[in-house]
Image (cartoon, rainbow, N blue to C red; front, side):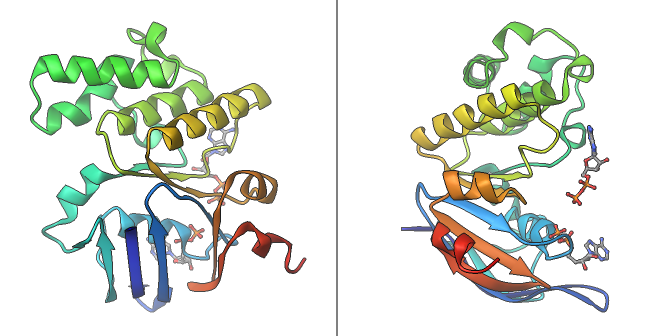
Length: 227
Ligand code: ADP
Ligand code: ADP
């Protein structure tokens, strides 16, 4: 079953065509890597998949549902995005308040919120730092808090934008283990990255964008086709 089905989407910022007739599908439980040089359209595509922006042409279906202005909010519960810079999605005074924000916003009762916060922080190995200010944490810890906040929404799909950037080797290993755990939880994962070694090792599907077009889509063999 296709979890994400993108058909011929186009997106413009004024005269700039950021996406031009992009199509692809992502199956349930897949590990997809989104690659391409800076300016290729990766961030734009992510914001469309998250229902934050609407394509000028074409269609996006998420879990069988067509993405529209109206369905955007529902889709944001099912497709979680971990932004490149964790400071963009951390804003509460404590780690646990930060993770509680999403589920509370869904209208869940405090018992359920607390349960989700505990589970999510344990998943990312941040349970012991729940009372700390997220702003005083290391970059890798902040990223894990951001991931916990997304996990607490219990989305079917999680998209991570350059999650390995600026992490030391230990934090990278921790994050790789966490990605594996999320995969085992049945979450469909898509990662935007420049890291070819990571892509080759981790992904089972590779999407390569360039100048707003899908240059290639297929297995990791693609990474070795040309230079
Ligand atoms: P990537 O994430 O692959 O670096 P982006 O999606 O950020 O690519 O950008 C795709 C194209 O759209 C680029 O040409 C970029 O300059 C342009 N672009 C991105 N955001 C904006 C914006 N807010 N206003 C105008 N142009 C933008
Ligand atoms: P891109 O990958 O889109 O070209 P950059 O690599 O230039 O983007 O930077 C991505 C973001 O990460 C920027 O918002 C930048 O401010 C931030 N950033 C860069 N270096 C660090 C760092 N060492 N710690 C935290 N944030 C950083």
